[in-house]
Amino acid sequence: MDREKVIKGLEVCFDSSKECNGCPYIATPYCKTTLRNDVTVLLKEQEETIRNLEQEIRDKNERLKERAEQVDAMLKEQKAKTGHWVSVNDGDTVAIDNDGSVERACYCSECQKYLIASDEYAVYGRYCPFCGAKMEGR
Image (cartoon, rainbow, N blue to C red; front, side, top):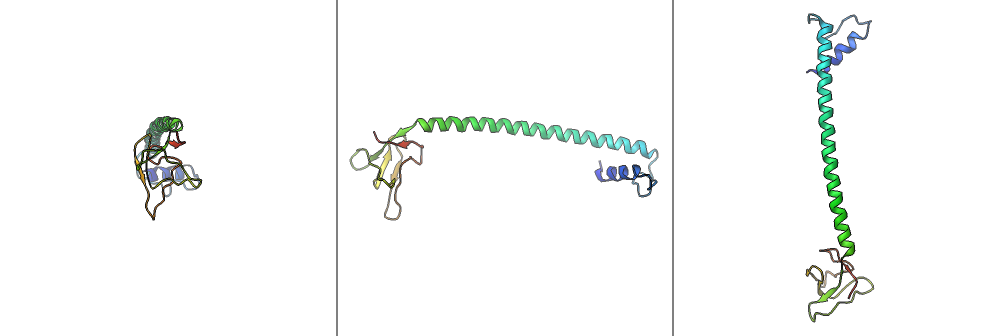
């Protein structure tokens, strides 16, 4: 359906001063009936488009709700998770300095993943970057 043609036809038909001049339906027999039919088809197409968009929005909202529930569950799990840093050298609990830095080589008591520092890269560890556990010591 040529949307622009229908709009132009409506503009000419409803402007009594134009008297069909410039109407794209002028050469069509029963032009007003043809225009009315084209408007009906165009409206039905628009209604179908709206229904499709509404369904797409409902589907996306459902996916967003599911994702929000997953994130909420993960946050609850992380809030409950606490651990401590364990020294690679002697297996003792590692203290966290006032600035948040920890020993050069340690691992998380919860997920067992390592933090290893170098001269260029200090390790800060109030939370495990891998599992999110809050490091509170034993």
